[in-house]
Every structure is written in structure tokens, then in C-alpha cells.
Image (cartoon, rainbow over all chains, first blue to last red; front, side, top):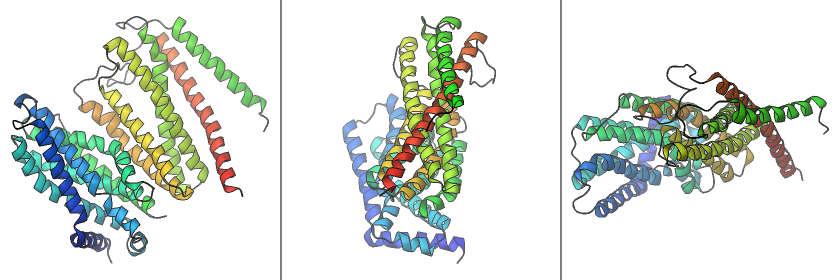
Length: 223
Length: 225
């Protein structure tokens, strides 16, 4: 079995298991929507005043996505450890192929949630999208970065006690540069100020995390 | 274990060296221009603390790589000891920085890019210690913590180089580490700063050796029947 088909098999296995229970998808979506409702109600019927809108709304969007990801993504490994299928997976597939498959699964899960959440967010919060292309780049590159870092860290957290609480603690310092870059690009997409080279840095972050993941995941995964 | 005369001598030498740095900071070095009152003297302690924490975190990363390569428990203990001490130095650097900021900027905290970087470093290495506490099997703990520390080495360039550049401006003085790569500092101040930084670095490695030995003894006791 080639490396690519192994990664594809892990991806397909995860989605098949997910579609049987839809646990992660429901967790992510309900978490995102509940937070969106909370934020929207708290800001009142008129939302944020137009002067503060650009500063506040992109940050809130990414906070919602971060918390949804932290609630749903670690499950990819916690579930394997809890049902003791991790050992079988260790025997069956190359570690880096497991990483690639899990990243693809997490990223596609996040993209599905983004596809449902972001239009809702734009509509409810009256976010004026000036450049749909920039917004798409921010969501794709930001989501991919979230999936890459979460997969690597979830593999670590799943092998420790207090998995659910440990994951956000481990992930926050590593995700912060990614979130700040994503927020800035999103701010640019709705007509706010944006620094030079944000897209480059975002892509570089994803590339660094991909390389680091492929190299370090096998060490974290194999006992 | 009796100490050899040489190892006693360099400890006393370190004591004299750091005493020299303290005296130099208050009596030998002039005050920096445009600083309120005597506030610039904190430089001779604040910068070496930040430097020592940087050395400690870098050393922790190197020992983690060594552990993943050779799988020697001693490398894992060395990395853990370095993170613990690095956190102490980083907290001290943060506090002295905040004290100075209160005098110069009239605010303890204002999210200057440097303050941002150090807070993330504190959160990261704090998480490292939480992870250490969360894994019982010594081998798994060493492996997972080493991987986490290496991830830190990967993200660090973003924290130190990308994010501060991304920021609009920084109020933090940059006479030593700056974009022009030239030292813009009075030569007497620079002498004291270098003496102090060297002293703090040696001090770190000394305490690190002690802590590493303590961890080794604790491990030996837990293994012995």
C-alpha cells in the first residue's frame, strides 16, 4: 500500500466513523452556533457600532472558530485511545500517513463548519465583506493551520491524563501567531487595515507546521 | 561527594563576578539619556534575566532533540530542569520589565510586542510543565514532553521575529538587538551589561546542574525498591 493510499484510507475511515455518529460534526457546529448566538445577543439588536466593527468582529469570528476547533478536533485521537483502536492503527499504517489522513479529516471538518458558520456570521453581524477572495484565503489557510497544529497536539494530549483540559493549554501558545495572522487578514477582507506579507506569513506558518508535523508526529505517536 | 578545589573556586569567582556587576550597575555605568530618574539601571538586571531565560529555553530545546535521538533519561531531566529555571528567569524578566514600564510608560502593561512574546513563552513552557504532570509513565512523559519542546523551537521564530515586525510599533528600547545590527550604547553601560549577562548565564548553568542532580536522585529513589 502506498503512502498516499494509506493516508487516504485513514481519512476515509475517520469520515466513515464520523458519519455513523456525527459526534464531532454536531459538537463543532452546535458549539459554533451557540457561541455565535451568545455573542450576537450580547451585542444587542444593532450590533457593534460601525466604527468599532472592523476591530471587534474579525477577532470574535476567530475566537468562535478556535473554541469550536478545541471542542471537536482533539476527538480524532482521544477516541482512538479510549476505544483502544490506537494500537491497531499504529500497526496498520505509517505514522506520517496517519498524520496526513487525520489532518485532512480535521481540515475538512473545519471547512464544513466554516462553510455553515461564516455566512451566518456575516449576515447576523452585518459584516461588510469587501474582498471575498481574501476572506476565503483567511478561512482556508487559517483552518488548515488549525487542523495541522491541532492534529499534532491532540496526538500528544490524548496520551496524557485530563486530555480534554490539557489540549487547549498545549494548543493556545502555538495557535496564537496563526490566529493573529488570520484575524488580520479577515480584517483586511472586510475593508480594514492589513499589514504587508500577512498571506505569506500565513502560508509559511502552515508549511512550517506541516513539515514539523510530518517529522515530529511519528515520535509522538510511536511508543 | 567532596567538591574539588577548582569547582569551589569558580563558584566563589561567580559570586565576586555578580557582585562586581551589581556595583558596576549602580556606580560605574552612567545613566542612559531620556530615561526618567535612575530607571535605566534596571537594564543591567532585566536584560540578563531575559537573556538567561532565552538560553534556558534554547538549551531545553537542544536537550529535547538529544533525548529524541539518544533516548537517555538524563537528557529529559536536563530539559525539564532548564524549562523550570527558564520560567523563573522569564517571570523575573516580566516583573522587572513591568516595573520599568510603570516608571517610563506610566502603565504596568500595554501589550508591547516584547510583552506579548514573553507572555506566550510563559504560557508555552507553563503548558510544558502541566504536560509533564499529566503523563505517569516516565518513558512516555519524556517522549511527549520532548516533542512538545521541539514544537516550541519551531514556533519561536514567529513569536520573536514575525509578530513584532507585524506590529505597528514598539516602545521597547532596542539598543542591543536591533534592525541595524549595531550596538548603540555607551561603552561603560555595555561593559556592565555584558558582565552581568555572562554572570547570569553561568549562574543558570550552575543552578541547572544542581536541579538536574536533584531530579536524578528523585528518579533513582522512585525506581529503587
